[in-house]
Image 1 (cartoon, rainbow, N blue to C red):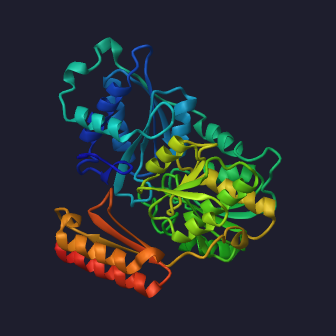
Image 2: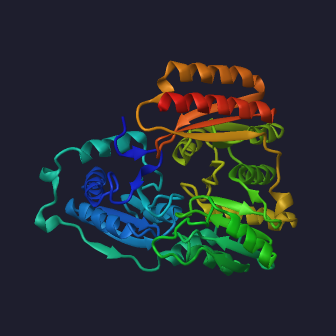
Image 3: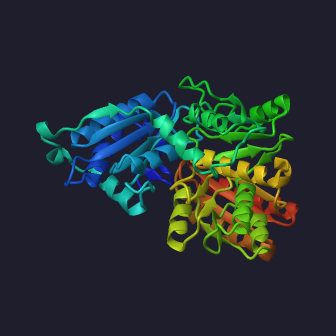
Length: 447
């Protein structure tokens, strides 16, 4: 059983367990001991988003890492994928991102990257948990072996150049009017700069973080402000990043939202045509729409599904030779360029498709008609509702009603006490009925 780590690192409300300075200190000590390399002075890089609690957690982790002898490089506010990239670029033994991604400012989280820039495996996370709950005092560094910490200059420029190099050198975005919403988060400096340096006319919103307004009525989980601005300035496209910029949602020139499934379909078709798609298709999670699977199937491509979490998407991609994967929520993993979801790089690939096809975004990114899909979240206080016989029977009955023309996915949230009930199928009325019935049974069982 996991005590601290969920589907994407450790996450919770700031200054309450497990997002306290004490836990952050111990987690840093444990992770530092696991990745301490005896052959040289080990390094760890730490990035964060713009949450108020980032200062507290960053300082606690610096204390933890230096206490076990690691050198700490502080990046300041930087996108999660930039931290992964800089972990490799700076030849660090470990990377840390302090962020709760798309959550409100009161939450925060800790994500780790290994020296290869990939997120840690379940096994390593469980070993870190074991160490956190043990007595680490005997393993602290001696006084002359304590680590140092310093801020690294020029990290924004490094990432900006890295992002620009993912497009062909002769490709320009000149003539495109782009609205970018940085969610008052980690990409508020780098994302507008990348687009402007590539020649676009850039209108930026969500670029005034104050510690409290990250993801607040902005970003990839709240696209109304972006849609309004796209309409107001008659932009060609709107790009919405989340708080740590590892996911993206697009708004087309008409103000309509384009989700991660449509973006994956767009990139997959483009790369397949150009002979750049490796593996038999792409990788997505159980939450991706059946319409995406049918779209790919019609082109002789496979949709390999994993459990929810971009980490599991990446693991499947690495194991089976895929180079495109992602989630409906907007995580797009393009392993030719990055080791984790990168909202800005994904947006650049979409812009490349728009530029190459010379058509409006609404045409370029509308690849399939989504199958009716309904998701309901049922909150519970304690226990394990999915182990109830009554709930199991309701789930079996729902699957039988949907038959071969639909899908049913029931799963607990990895970050909140929620049961997520999702169904999809060609008959919208039937899908609604099935979800309502199962959600009702789960709610009564969890009461």
